[in-house]
Image 1: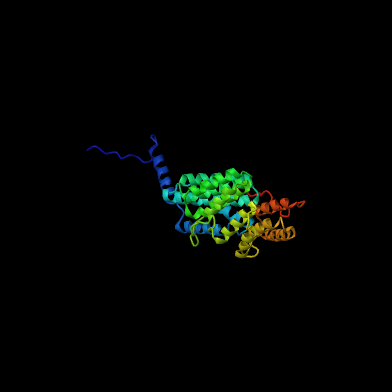
Image 2: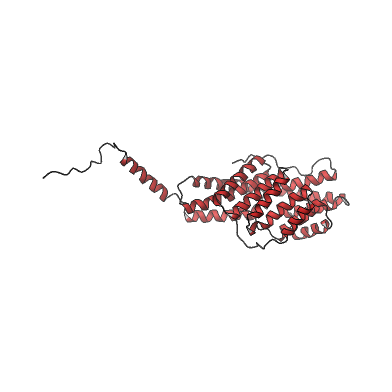
Length: 319
């Protein structure tokens, strides 16, 4: 009886099959363990929303390190062989973390970093085709354009944010468009944006990443700021109402005081100067490039020889 010769597993790998099988085993294990565990995903979700609620109330110097740390963790995870569902979820997380870093870079006075994070946010939004992230990316584009003095571009980006159609962004898109139009001297455009702002759907209690909820306090501050920039009638009354709605020592109080100072400057320069001093005290605790810029605009309009509130210096925090 002839003997049946079994393949010798130790013979030379002439065709490369055993080596490929070993690689397949390694790849299988890599895929099996690539996804972050459920607790990690839940913690990332919680941190996204925590950053949203503190984005405009916590100094950028305190937020940059934890946001950058999470951003790096998520970018590293996206380089692994994730399941499609987890890859999509982490792409959204990466997009909103990039948005936070863009806003913080604006506040830090680091415009090159802000533009880079704005571009990355838009790329993540394009991958997901998600209305909330798409609109949020457009609002960041608007903000970056505004601080760079490109007010037409800021207005166009704000309109793109509105066109994304997510109700959570309705207020932010209208506010950004109104501010850009008022700065351009487009009174009709600013009033039209404010009219849309008055129709903002209620988003109180909604839990979304990105911007904090656009509530009645923010609406009052935006309306007062825009009407004050336009020199419209009733600016002082609207500004005082905004001051009453805000809490002492907060950035929102600073914006309301800036609107009131702008409204009072033509007729009561000493009172306007006193209000600007109050804002500088707020900026000592809550440094903000945007609010500092508004203060300095008012100072130049009033004819002061030097700015009261210096802009934050270039941040050495590029990721």
